[in-house]
Amino acid sequence: MNAIAIKPKTVELVPARTAQLNEITWRTSDDAFARKLQVIVNNATAFTIAGADYDALGQWTDETIQGLILARYGLELATP
Image (cartoon, rainbow, N blue to C red):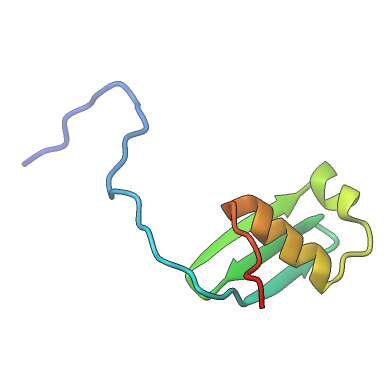
């Protein structure tokens, strides 16, 4: 079968994947020269903070990253 030209369009090829999270772990990859911070959560998903958002982080800590993850995924800390 030969390729058939179409008008470009973004389509969902794979349905959204979901997972139940009971705890979070993360690791970061910081590229200060490119002003980009990648946060890998539970070795399953990742998000990137770049440009002006990266600059706004300033000197980030584990608590900063934890807050970003909680906000990004709408999570709440469990009560002891």
